Image (cartoon, rainbow, N blue to C red):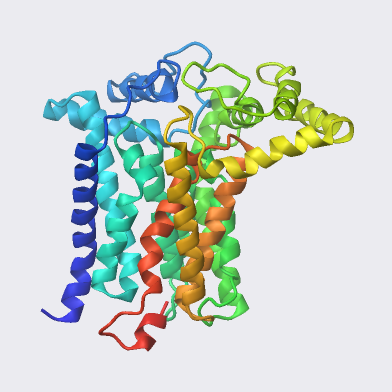
Length: 416
């Protein structure tokens, strides 16, 4: 079999390997607990998906929720899985598991294509590392929006990377990268700024040799695709509510949750041991009520910055570092921290190993920028490891790029 034939089989092999790793992981790992009644799945995603699958429309099934509480991406995917599952006689749980496995297969194919730039074996190794990333493996066993979210994230990154490769300029790939970034944000608002970041990354130093005009054109097309993906939802949501809400109202709720997570009882969240000073800062924000305005939050932050700066600094320090290990249940936080610090360490080594001015270095730099964006979003809202799992899983799958192939000339490794 020729090398070209092997390269064409890499995505298929990556998909099979990722699914195999996931299924074995489900068999080995303890079963996750059932969703808490107050969590997103039983309260919003499952009822909304069932409503859509049954033809009743995009109508919230619980008081207090509106059509713009969450963006529509995950409910639409859940509805599609329910519709297919109903035809096949599957339970809802089985249908969602099928959706998750499909996402794993697509993600494995995409990651193996990205890592396959260093050779077919490293492409399959990338798919294995991506699917075996423990936090992602744990998430795939549950009905969570992070599973399709991480696949759309990788797809948008892969389209961006392909668009900026050396060779003829392909505008449709830039549009696809932006549209996929918009689709990622429609699943989880933590990717709200992904389209803008990918547009900026078109000017990343070390990218393939293109003129400023071509890079500017690429950035504009990425933004155009991003806007086109978001526009239908924004227009529909504005007509339904009479107000403009960017992606969903959950953002404001998440900001206050990220300032008070250790002093609010949400039923499914364990008590986080914090210092009295940090608790005092959280209590100051909690006193503002259930859903204070951004202006009220800013006033309280300004009051603490002048009156009790040490307490506020401790709280902000927690928010900066906790995304590396924090979980709602408080379980396995040490294990999560070890895994994430290990991935970060390997990423830094990979950046150092990749020759400067090459496509490999550019790929890692762009992945690091996406990680920084998600880290900043987690800092702004709830500092929890789930929010860093998608970019860290993607980086895990890219690590084989840092290894020069044994049987290929080093020049082939350097191509973007």
